Amino acid sequence: MNTLSILIVGVGGQGTLLSSRILGKYAQLSGYDVKVSEVHGMAQRGGSVITYVRMGDKIASPIIEEGEAEYMLAFEKLEALRYIQLMKKSGKIIVNGQKIDPMPVITGTADYPNGIIDRLKNKIETFVFDAMSEAKEAGNIKAVNTVMIGKLANIMAGSKDIWLEAVRACVPPKTVDVNILAFERGYKL
Image 1 (tube, one colour):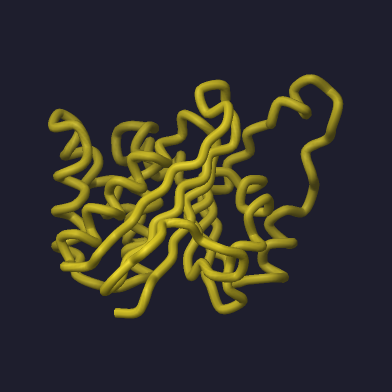
Image 2: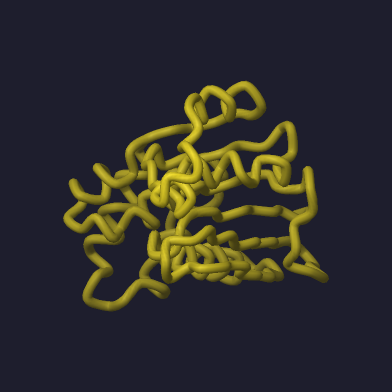
């Protein structure tokens, strides 16, 4: 396998960091070298969060440069637009259609942009769905991250059993069942 670069973007508290751990575990269980780098600002106050995950035969650095990412998991649509320049033109974005107002919108100094999904789709292949509703149907709205991982697993292919093993290894033991169900819901989307 050549290097595969995946971005995970969202807002603090959405489960992006757990998603990066699941991806890292999947890479390890699949026999790949993996590097993960978390970059976040005011994550605990709803600020922007971005995580780089790179896997392959030999990975020197976790950093993803402009135009290098094959996949993006976007837990919030404005965050997808914020980081789209890091995507390859042939890449794929998986977007949770959720809208979370950033602080400038909350304080009234800026407006939330219109037409984000159309702008994304005009630049790159984009899959949009309501991951929050899928997680709720699975039994816990906090399982948005495993819904998103399920959709990514379906698009990336690879061994579904290894994906499931990675989920089981990374989520809290008491939440394994709901997270497996959430993964399955995302996988079937």
